[in-house]
Length: 140
Image 1 (cartoon, rainbow, N blue to C red):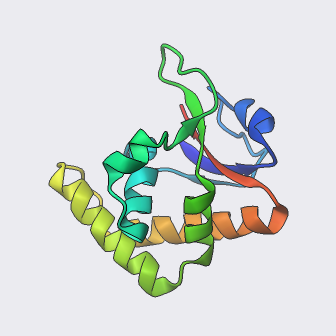
Image 2: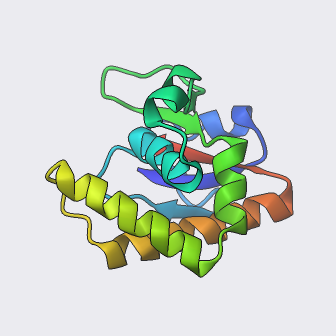
């Protein structure tokens, strides 16, 4: 699984099942469900409940989900903007909340690891904004 930037949905969909293989600027994911994570991050940034975000269709999957579980989704413009404009203090707060959520579900994500990962994603989001691109995730 990796987060990456691409100019549009059509280009992003081409990585389904293969990953970016260096074709796009990317950040590797971790051992967590990325579609749940982006909803959790948005919830932690904004205070909107994850259920409301999911009912609104977040995240938007742009490819079919195959039998092997591969798919690509686009990170919402709102999450991309939140990451791109986040300062260290807000990233630290979201990282702390996310680590606690994941640990509560029995996952081994520590606050420092969450902060480093969100920092890398924030850099990727800033790059996407600078290029007029979008932020995506390829689940393989």
